[in-house]
Amino acid sequence: MGKRTSGATKGLWVAWIMLLVAAVVFAEGVTLSLQFHARHMRENDYRTYLTKATAFMSQNSYADALVQVEEAVRRAPEKPDPYIMAGHVHYRLKNWGRAISAYGTAVAKGSADEGARLNTTWALVELKRYDDAIAEGKKAMEAGFTSATFPRYLAEACWRAGKIADAIPFLEQSLKGFPNDLYLLDHLRQGYAAINQPAKAAEVQAKATDIEASLHMGGK
Image 1 (tube, rainbow, N blue to C red):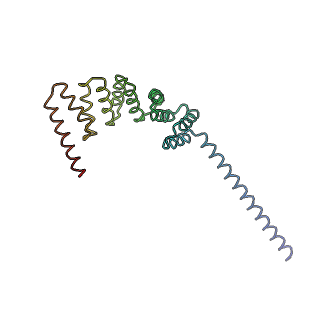
Image 2: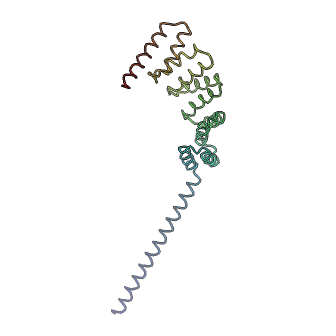
Image 3: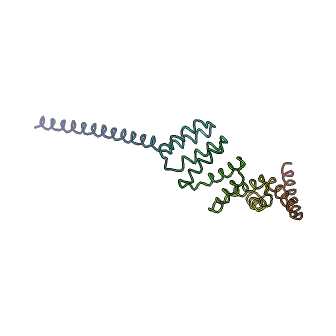
């Protein structure tokens, strides 16, 4: 009886060990399968390539960033984000036309990215397409984008186009966001002088003088 009991016990131990080994092998197989699946998902996720593009941009490696962006576009041509990133890379490179095109595609695909609108407006200014820049900036503001940089860019577009009177309301609006900006204040002063409003020009000049004085005092 003792020998039979000992044999049965030994058999149970062997069975348990085999079961544990099988469980470990199964668990390792599941882990490897999950790791492979996760790696496959990452490799096919366009956001993986946008992350790499962002890293390359931070290193000023724009050619490498564009390679990653192109791969993101290939993986998800229906998404706006890859085109936003393409716009950002071209914008950094001052490829204004390509940046405008990429941003336009992103907007057409449903992007609500404010930076795309801002950069498009400024890219148009850089291309001296001032009327287009004014139209683009106004359209963005009418769509609900509220950055104070929009009226600043619109003021600059009007100013460079020689539309001084049109620039004035945008200068006034942008100064709400940048109240101590001496560049904007000087343009506003010149604008008031150009439309024969010397009292307002003097008021703006006084404000600019006060700001300059405070800056000098702060530097001491």
